[in-house]
Amino acid sequence: MSAWKVADETIKSIVTTLARSIFREEYRYFLKRWEIEEDKDFDILAKIFMKLNDLSLLERYGDKMPELPDTRFWSSEGEILDNYQMLKSLHCLSYQSCEGWAEQTRWYKFLDELIGKWADYIATKTKQYDEARWR
Image (cartoon, rainbow, N blue to C red; front, side, top):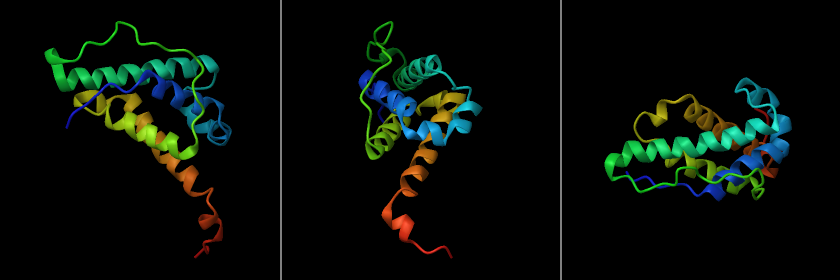
């Protein structure tokens, strides 16, 4: 498997979407359990996702790792993604951040759980779900 650096813009959009969407209201308990409650916590989360991806690259490439800037860029506003792009971007970040022991970190586990919650959120908001029988 190869790994690559997830674009800062992708991470910024993931975190902005999480912070600004209705999803945040519906899953406040989930976020609170992970100690993400205030705007500053989302800034920290973006930096954590960037470092998680960097750690995975280091695990994958070691001394041959592509050069990364000392500080990856972060600002608090990114594009708000639609639900399907958000899920795809979360899968991208997860796949590119699972090398070595990066996958064992607390924040990779958060990312994995977030993907499941987001997918469930999407599935239960569809017309097909609404029209399905309860049996």
